[in-house]
Every structure is written in C-alpha cells, then in structure tokens.
Length: 434
Ligand code: AMP
Ligand code: GLY
Image (tube, rainbow, N blue to C red; front, top):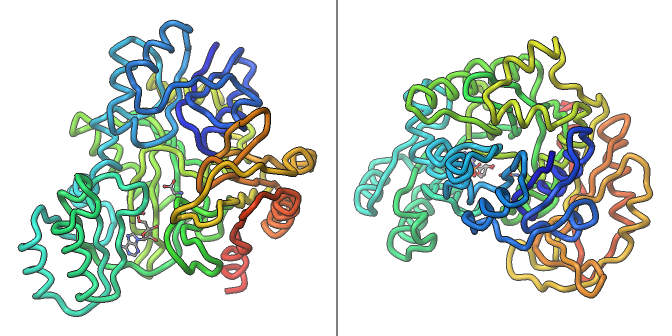
C-alpha cells in the first residue's frame, strides 16, 4: 500500500519514519515534507492547504491511506474532500475538527457533556466582555481567541487590567484577525500540564501513552510561548489512575457527545490536561497528534502503526482490539525525550538558510532519531527553513538516561544561532522528588 502524509513538521517526519516500518507499506509520500522526510520518503511539492491538488495526487497515485498531520487543513475540510473522492483518510471531518478550530464550541461541548474544564464565558463583542470583567474580582484570568492562532491565541492575564487590555487588543486592534471574532474568557488553572492523546474511530477509544510538552521558550518555563520546545513520555504527572479518570470523565463523554451531535470523531483526540487540586481539567482539545509529543510517543510505539490508522479511518478499532487481544498497542517501556533545536530569534523573527552540520554523526548514535521540522535541501545541503528546526529524540533506560542521550546528540549538531532548552524532562525528576 502507498501512504501519503500531509504536513512538513517534526510530527510528520516521525509519522513517515513510523509508517515506513510497516510491512504493509510499499511507498510513502510526504506533502510538502522537509529535508528529513526527503531522506525516507518521496516529497511532493503540494502545500497542505491545496486540498484539491492533494486529492488529485492521491487519486492519480492510488494512495491507499492519507494521514493528515496539522490542524489547519483538518479544520478546512481536507478529510471531507478525501471522503467525497472515496479515498481513505486518517483524521476528523471539518465538523469534528471544530473541537480544535473553535474554542467556544469546544468549551460549550465540555459544559454540556459534563467534562471538567475551567469555568468560562464566551463573548462575540468587546462591550459585553468589558462589562463582565468590570464585575469580576481582580483575579488571574485567561483570554482565548475562538479560532486557530498557531498556539498564540491564549493570553494568560495576571488580573483584570491585563484581561481588559487583552480584550481590547483582540476586538479593537484585531490582533488575531478573523480568529478573534469570538473569545473565551476563563478562570486561570494552576497545576502540572500533560498531553493525553487517544486514537478514536467514532466510538472506540485507545489512549496512547501520556507525554508532557514544554511550551515556554526558556528554561524553567520562562519566556514567551512557543509551539513546544520539547517533550517526554511517559510522564509521572499521569498515573494509571489519572489516565482512567481522564478516560471516564473526558474522553468517553466527549466522543459520545460528538457522535450525538452528528460530528462523529475519527482520528487523534488530544486532550491538554491540567492536573489541578480538584483533579484533571481540560485546557484545550486538539484534533491531531501533538508536535513535539508525537516524536516522543511514536519512538516508544512498538506496534505497527498502519493497521491502527486504517482501523481508525474505517471505524474498526473495536474489531482490531478483539483480534489482537489485550495488547492492541505494544509500548517500549523505555522513556523517550525529544529536545527541539530552534533558530535564533524563534518564536519571534528568525533567519532561514543556515547550513546544518553534524546530522550524520548524531544519526549514528544508538536509540536516537533526529526528526526534522523546519529544514530544507539547498544544493544538496540541509539548511534551516523554520523556527523549530529539529526534534532530537532518544530512548533511555530512565528519563534521565533518555535526556542524557538526547542532549549528547544535540551537542553534535550545530548551525549559526542554534539553541534549545536545557531542561527538557526535568519536571519529571522534580515531581519524583516531590
Ligand atoms: P491552549 O492552547 O488552550 O492549550 O493554551 C496554551 C497554554 O496556555 C496551555 O498549555 C496552558 O499553559 C495555558 N493555559 C490555557 N488555558 C489555561 C487556563 N485556563 N489556566 C491556566 N493556563 C492556561
Ligand atoms: N505541542 C502542542 C501542540 O501540538 O499543540
């Protein structure tokens, strides 16, 4: 079978790498891909938002399964277009992807389904939002734009004044454009965060091993928010009991509510969880694999991923579980740590086109994978082409061993202005030490 992966980040490189290990697969294409996917698969020069051309390509090449990585094409209806063309595709339809595409929709659904989340209000104009803020105590609040904003649409405000400024900048200055036509204002939660990703085929849910992202740019969670500077899996934030709780109180009610609303969810449901003193609460839903969570989690997945992706796309997960017995998913017990190496200036302005050295030496290290994100080939040379450039991922006997190995590989790689956080996975140790 031929497989097409849509996207060009570290998550997509990890997907290509994992899918290629399947004996069911003859060829993998990646649209548009990066310099890393070009080493393994055939890159196709079609952008993720060019849905018509992607459908035409899949049809012409007789692609047996298309796997969509990023949220934007999912929210634009790429899955609906593939289904209409009778092409098999992994990911939620446009109506189901609203769980990520509209924070207002996702919060209302959680309220209706009784899913624990921060208390909230939705506003579609400045005045009622400001009036409501007037009557609030001066407490920390979070202001979120309703639409997709590449991880930047969440403003954590220390008090009322900051929240007022946030509301004004969204409605008056239209800082986030169309994405800010509606906003959610919610209580600020405190606790450890974790990412719980699950395969969902409409009814059946298989949670993947939990992971923890590092969203802030600086060590010790300081500095501006990014797309994610590193991840590790498993995480002590999520005990088996907490995972059961999240399954019961979050994943099952959400999947059922979506089906009742005729928005049947197929794909990866990603619950961003905060473990508060009152138990786990949902910060957000995403409708895809996390990046860089996918790099850490897929490193640990021993099972062939392709039958799983196919079963999700076909609504056949229950059958697959029946046939494979207890262990539909086989995990490497060893932890994985993924360290993101970024361009100088990221998450603000950065330059592209710096040649990257040391990739071959890093690739020779055992149990290590250097997943490319923002890279390109220029005259046969791998150069930087994005903010997050590489996701250097290693397995180890313990989290600290995996961390050590990942940073050993990082040390071998260099380019002008390369940087990374130095503390990926340290939260695990801090938690263990209490
Ligand atoms: P989101 O895109 O909704 O996950 O938000 C991005 C980040 O903002 C989260 O990973 C949290 O660190 C933070 N955040 C979002 N909602 C809240 C909240 N209600 N309380 C505290 N922090 C939040
Ligand atoms: N790492 C966060 C995300 O994928 O949304």
